[in-house]
Length: 349
Ligand code: MRU
Image (cartoon, rainbow, N blue to C red):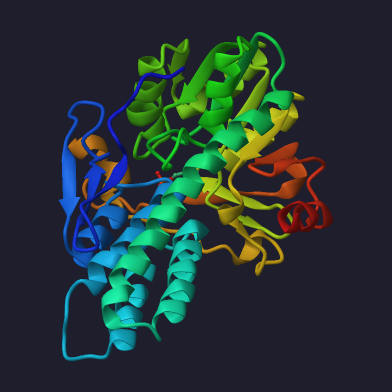
C-alpha cells in the first residue's frame, strides 16, 4: 500500500468553509498548502496548476462553486450562480471533468433553487463532496479493473502525473500501477519527466518514491530507446478528455508515446473515469487544446535556457487516435477493442 501523502485537496469547515490545496507548483521541494477562500483564488489555482489533473480539477471547480456563492451581492441567486459557473469554466479548456463537474453542480442548483435560500450552500457543498467521494471510489475501481491487463513482473512506462495528486483518490493510470504493486505483479515503472512542466519528474517520481515503488526517471526523448532495449512491457497514461470514438486527449507527449508503443509492438492503455468521456464529440478533432505561456518552455523552473525573443509553441495536450489505444480502463471495466459502440455500451451500463 502506498503511504499516506498530504491531501491534494480538502474542504475545510461547513458551507461557509474553504478549499485547502496542496500547492503542486512547489513540489517536490516544498510541501505548502494554499487556502482558496474566493472563487478568484480557485480559478487562479486551477489556471496555474497549483491543482491539476483532470479529476482533481473537476473536484476543485465544484468546491469553487460553493465558495463563489458564499458572497452575497445585489444580483439574484440565479445570476450569481451563473456568473461563478461561467468564470470557473474559463480556468482551463481541455479537461472535460471541469465542465462535467460544473454541469453537475448546475443541475443540483436547479433542484435546490425552489427551496429556501439557506438550503442552497449546504446542498451545493453536499454535491461537491459527493463528486469528491465518487472520484475516490472510481480511482479504486480503475486500479482493480486494470489489473487484468498487467502481466507478472510488469515494467510499466507512464507519462505526466495521474496519481493521488491528480485525483481525489489514488489516481487513474497510477491506480493501476499501485494495484499491480499491491498484488505483486509490478517490477518497475519508467516515469517520463514530462516537459515542459515536469509533472513526471516533480510529481510522479515523488509519489512513486514515497510508495516504495521501483521507479526510474527518464527524459521524454528517451522513451524510444528504453522501449527498443526491451525494458518496457506496457504503457499506461491518463486522459483529460475522451471523444465518443475513443480518441483521447492527454498531456503533450502522449501521442508520441502511443506511436512508439505501436512501433515496438507494446500495448498502450488509457485509464480514466467515466467523467473524462465527452460523448458530445464524435472524435478528437473537436477537443480544445490548451496553449500555455512561452516561458514554460524557455525558462523551465524559472531558469532561462533559450535566447530572448525566440518564437515558442506550447500546446499543453495532444490527442492520441483511438486506433493506437489497445484498451481504455474505466471504473466500469475495460473497453477493448476501443470503438464508439463499446464505449457507449460500457458507459450506459
Ligand atoms: O496539465 P496537467 O498537469 O493538468 O495535465 C494532467 C494530465 O495530462 C493527466 O495525465 C490527466 O489529467 C489525467 S490525470 C488522472
